[in-house]
Image 1 (tube, rainbow, N blue to C red):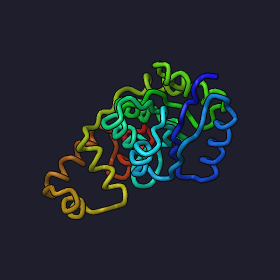
Image 2: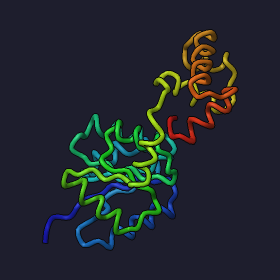
Image 3: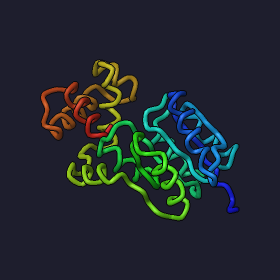
Image 4: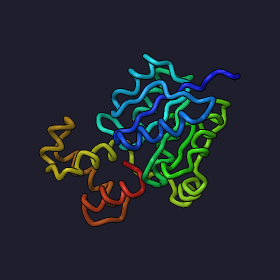
Length: 204
């Protein structure tokens, strides 16, 4: 019998996490060696348990799965990363791959497909949900700069320009300029629409 493929599972919803762990546990060559519910616990768990593959949900407290993927890519480059998402947003795919992910799948994919993705990334292949891949190509590149994305993310809670400037250590004029540019690029009327569109596209 070949060596077990050790998997780390990061998912904040306990029922989903336990279901994924149970399904993967049915595979004879896969063993879930660690489970975490927060993105900012991924790197520490990976260092502690030495998995071969990390399965990361995108939406998690503490840190997104994409941010955790970037962390793993920097500190544990040999570890293969599979990003799972409920949200089939094409922009997420591009961002995930740029962050070092080796596979990108939607959560409602069949369990057999997920197990096969784990095996494929370990063999050096990339696995991408074909529907998302087509949408990503059709949707074009993210027009926002890193700073514009940062400011839009911070503005999502309705903070004023003064509050954003204080939080990000920028002048109010600079914040206003970045927001104005982002609004123009997304061809919307205001920051609330800019945040909504950028989220829908997976650009934040």
